[in-house]
Image (cartoon, rainbow, N blue to C red; front, top):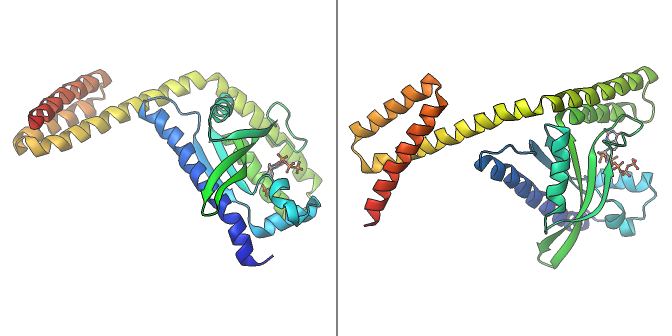
Length: 267
Ligand code: 0O2
């Protein structure tokens, strides 16, 4: 196939990956903006390279005439979560969306692969708009914890290095490392509530500080400089004291002052 034709075929996949990255990152933002814990820690995406499509087609005996249907992971999204519980929350979020239709799912967390591989896979249909009209794209979404991702990344590069001939002692090491990953994730789940509380209060504080700074910035436009500098000094003093209650009270008072000036400027 000509390189130009490949480009034409793969372009909508690039569009799908880019759109989905924006959408999943937006989910993270939505959680954080309301001061809530996001089940998605980070998201990455890629379009399979031409050489790796050809390699997979050859390995699985796929006719190039219908490789778009048979190779389900030309577009791939990887979602990383902190805890195993988060993975299933993300699965529910995806199932409830109207812009993705689930084709199939594989739960390699409850059914760990022989290699030790753990992850949750979904194949979804996602529509993109191109100059030629609507195109339905298959996207593979891999959802896993940070620990599962660490293992899979190392194992993947070892697989690449050794091809089919991974030495037995390395395979054994990987197998016990996979067990350690399962234990680590289980231990983390036990302390999940405490970790989440700590993260939530960090996010709440960050949001309060961001609001205060925006208000101070806006007050520069309406108050005289001395008055704003005094507010700023008060803020630094309270911030340095580390007293969250006082910070919240200060934030509320500053909100009222800002609202008053906003109302005045409207009249
Ligand atoms: P790449 O290079 O990541 O794109 P199978 O027939 O069992 O090999 P299948 O039916 O294509 O796999 O689907 P499956 O099992 O859901 O695997 C799809 C993808 O999951 C793989 O893509 C890998 O990215 C990942 N994966 C599956 N098993 C393993 C494993 O044992 N170790 C690691 N590190 N990753 C795994 P590709 O196309 O194989 O490779």
